[in-house]
Picture 1: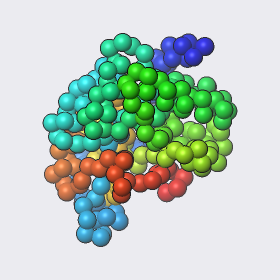
Picture 2: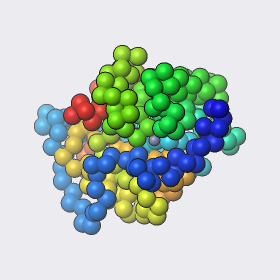
Picture 3: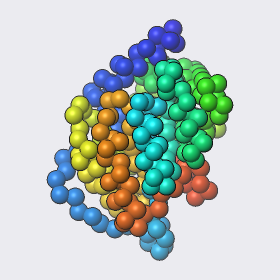
Picture 4: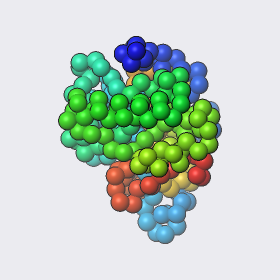
Length: 255
Ligand SMILES: [Zn+2]
């Protein structure tokens, strides 16, 4: 049954296009992007604003390229992974950790019908991902969780208390407040991903960027260098979700 669910992974691509794994509040209609300084708490205190880069739904064929770019720019990221069974993808779980990035939990199958069937099913999906990743990589993922479709999707299906429930199970819950909208439809260009990211980052601190490491977001890898350059050149500091000063939990309902 679970293998069948994983086979349904490709259905995920369609689901993401139709429902949007990205923040429904973001707007991809961007032309000229104004570059404004961040106005968040850290900036007001005279500190540099923090930015956290996150990639959902991987690993996939382009994850190795993403890791190469992150190494070149010396930027840490968090990968909210699912259980991919393709032989060639398995070493990527290990590589993510060994290159200093965070392996985080995005459920085993990402299939909404199973993940959100009930609380037991959600817990089973999370624990299955943990044991799967440990089995194929030798590393247990961090107890950092992102709901497939974000916390709004989790709360829509399992009620408004589900985020607190996850926290009571010992997980940190992290949504996003900035999105490249790289999986909202087919054919999104690298320039659109760059502009959506910059536009939705304005005035935020911390900035938590959502991008995808998935076959249905093929231009993300091409947008990445200019996204990293923008934040580095505009006085932001890239942080890791495992840093002491990283947000403990960050979800839309809490902001
Ligand atoms: Zn996802």
